[in-house]
Length: 266
Ligand SMILES: [Zn+2]
Ligand SMILES: [Zn+2]
Image (cartoon, rainbow, N blue to C red; front, side):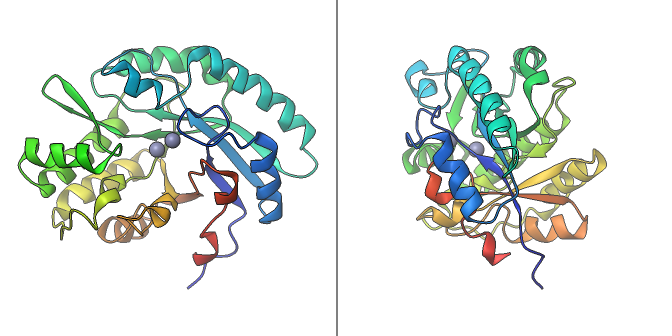
């Protein structure tokens, strides 16, 4: 059964994203209006509160604190300018970095009052004292498989980290929406698996439900050549329905032409 038309895209990046396109804010907004959306959230990557791994790699992941201040100011103006046509929310995609919860909370305390909406995402996995950017490349994913002893182990580690993010004390401004909860399936066509740790997925679903959190139903995976499915997909998607967890659709656009893309499938 199809839901009623989706009128909100809750996950959009911006010209401030160092690994995105230089498409302007107005290109994203005009595309959203053209797609018939009534509400959007810009969720730029939050600056990292600490340098916890290779600084060059991190610089490619998120803008600096100085840049994000400009991002907030620019969006405040746009929000007003477009208020008759579309509701624009100011947001961030906040990284959960295991071991740096206090630093993340401090940053959120500093800027949280500027946020209308936000997402909490896991992209980094901590193994021993080292962090790995799980979604960075198939090579890094391969290193994780080797390090942890199998694809199943990487999936377990990802979901365990998401569960930690849900339980983390990140203060008043902690995001209530869990970003792309099955992002670990990004390279599933290259690293196939019939993942059967349903118990762990069930813990994740229950933790989200108990706190009244929601999920980022993220269509970006459908555009990725080794994924071709949304996050969530499969068993976890069924649990989301079983527990009646609220979904907020998000395109995770880093390009204005991707806004609202694939929403017609739902
Ligand atoms: Zn990004
Ligand atoms: Zn993300």
